[in-house]
Length: 395
Image 1: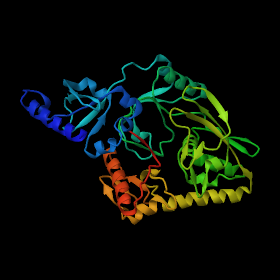
Image 2: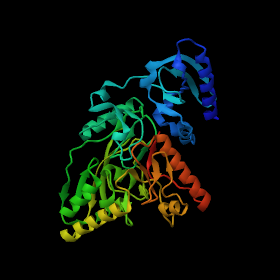
Image 3: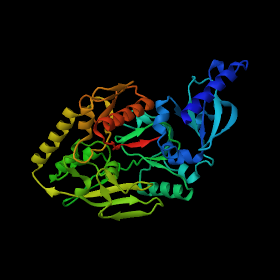
């Protein structure tokens, strides 16, 4: 209903503009300003079940930096959300949603921290799709990260946490602050224990463990991203996962309290941890076993080789897109559904590994969203199984 209404309004505005001399250059754009709540919580939570549908309908998401180019503003009220219609001068004719700018500017305490603005998400993720990261904060120390979280808590400001961008699909501009840790890359050994900051490379940590002659982390040698992302998702492979070797971990609560603790039952599950909703992982320590350095290195290399031979590493991807249902694998279900090689624009189901959806170089967020929905629908139709995303989806 929202899509049909947006298209109807776009058509009406196109006819209206055509009657106004010198306006619009013959193209109309239906734009919707979402309330502040939408860009704080994410469009997916504000319009549950509709964000992917919006992309499939060709509706684009633009940030508030387009506001200065808007003219002929008129109010359109909807029962499920307050929507403002606008025409953006000189923009190609299509439907669009423009997220409302923040009502208040970011506090000075945040702006004093290391940050960048208007960073394209294709430069921040391995998949290479998405819009603009309006505010990217990159603290280099734990106190800076703590200052960021505390400032956001005081201002009641929502934020996102970004790791290596290898397990993430971004479907539009993100106007809320994004936190990406840039701690010094130091791997510390204490007997059989190895500690890494959250911004350390996950594969690099597995290699470092092998160099120290410590076994137990070989499984991680095929899992990209950062150690912080691995902690957040309880990353695993070959029947092993991080919680199996996790000794202690450090994190910030959503209020900015620094906590260091041992894992407890229920805190980590298959591809899940409680470290969501504003929690920020800072570092973790694993407890490993002394072993033969050459044998451990050989296993690390073997796992990396398996990854290279079975996964489409030559194309941009976000890793496995869907979680494995109980008793089977998502890749097998997608393969049996005949979807290997199925393509929407420049987004494709990999012919090497069906649970990898790849970007041939110019895939759009809309194409990727549509491809994910097609895969889910086909697997549901053929197998009666509802696939759940393993990747995080930002919209």
